[in-house]
Length: 476
Image (tube, rainbow, N blue to C red; front, side, top):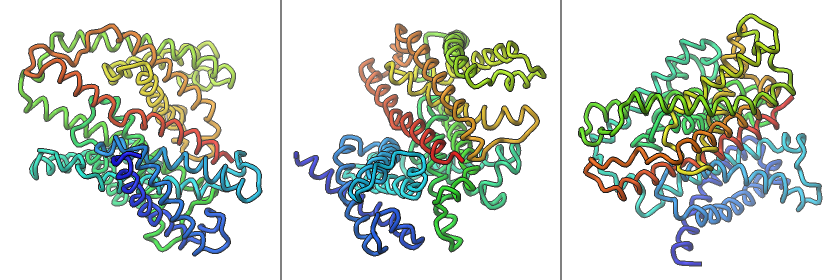
């Protein structure tokens, strides 16, 4: 092992120890640790939990040693690491060590749900501590200064508070029920806004990536606050059993939408500042805004048709066209197909606009597309569709489980949409290379590739993995 890898392993082990205490103590005081660790006594379970946490932290440090200076990327990888830890440890290794069969069935997974939440919390805490232990963290080399960081934090507070206020007005009790009263919702929004700008102080490249990353942040907010911190502050035990999480599930879609809207508003505020204060050369382009916008809309609409046709196969299997047709007062399957394809085109066109130039390879295009499909499953199938049919948002675990085929359809739609948009953009001259700007082409290309890579891969993986896992495990 190289000196660099050994140092990363030590940092990871220290971060894992902190993560072990952060996830183990709540389990200990909630009397869930024996079941999670497989030990009969809570003290012995805590010791085993900490030993495993240190070992896995060292593994995490080695795996993430080259990404430690990017806080957002490491935090999202921590979320994924915790999820895979649950699959590997709680559902596979531990049952085998106890002489039982592998716990890959639905009932075994539901019984192990407290371990999943503990592993997610462990992954997040370990990732944050690992970032803080780096010798040259991103913030240490930042040149913003006190005034610059004050502006960043203010942007986070404003965007988070505005997002909470807008969702409270539009969705009413369906949204405000995720926290205790209006003050709780406002505080949740501010936490989401601040969390986003701390992960992305410069703001990502566009609205689309911001929305996808905001969804990931919203999931983290749900795990850390409504599911963990709030009950502990009330003096309650952790509500981490399957039945308790089903009761808390309505807060998840609200947290996801809060994260998305806070991230989008923060990105728009950052973009507005650039428009007002950036040097004219940095804003120059060789094409007009109208030309670029029209091209993006047409390309996205084309991808939307392809994705919509793929989604049609799934909708036909589950008999969903009649429900879609009710949006326009019809019960005809043919009308449902037409409405579905029109929606696919509109969502595809908006994807083309928001994700223009964000994919530097096919995998990136598919990844962003999957993220877009997931967002519209939450916003469309669980929220807008039931409201459009005269009801309220369907944010219960049972409704999400019933809409699981729709989730798969949305993910397929998004993957086709993302692949098509990338293919149509692939032969373009990269729009971010501007000869008249006072930066060399090579430097601008390198900077842009770094920006695109960012935390994109872990965001795609986290969204798809957690969405599918929770929906299956919490099905009634």
